[in-house]
Image (tube, rainbow, N blue to C red; front, top):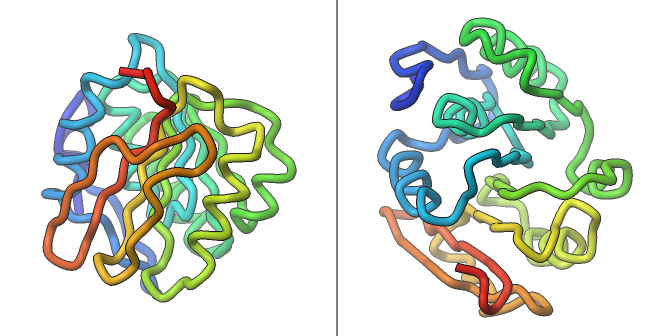
Length: 183
C-alpha cells in the first residue's frame, strides 16, 4: 500500500497484520476527488477507525494542515505512528489510541472533515454516527465521509446533516454528509 498523490506520493505504508481492511487506492482517489471542491485552503481532519492511517496520511499528503487519528488497537496505533514517521508527517498529527466512542467524549475540537471507516461487521455504525453528529468534532461546515458496506444503508440525514453524495465501489459505499446549504 502506498500514498497515491500529493507531496508524499509513492511513500510505502505498512499495514497491521490483523483484522483491518485497508481502503483501496481506487476508493481513496474517489474520496479526495469528491472532497476537492468541499474543503478550504487550510483544512483539518480526523480519521476515525484509522487502521493503518492510510486515509489520514493521504489527506496530509494532499494538503490537510493537520489530521488526528483514532484507533483502538495498540498494534495499529504503532503502525500509524511508524507510517507518519516514514512520510515525514508526524508533526502534523496526533494518534489517539482509544475507541471512537471514547474519542467522541474526550476530543473537544471541530474538524473540517471527519473520516469514518469502521469494520463492515460493526453493527453500531448508526449509533456511532448519531453520537458523532452531536459531538464537538462536528461543526456547521464539517463534511463527514463514511465508508461502509453496501449491505448497510445509512439514513438520508442526521439532524441538520444530509447525505449530499453517495458512491458505490464493489462492496464499498461512500456517503458524504454536510449541512443543508453548505457547498
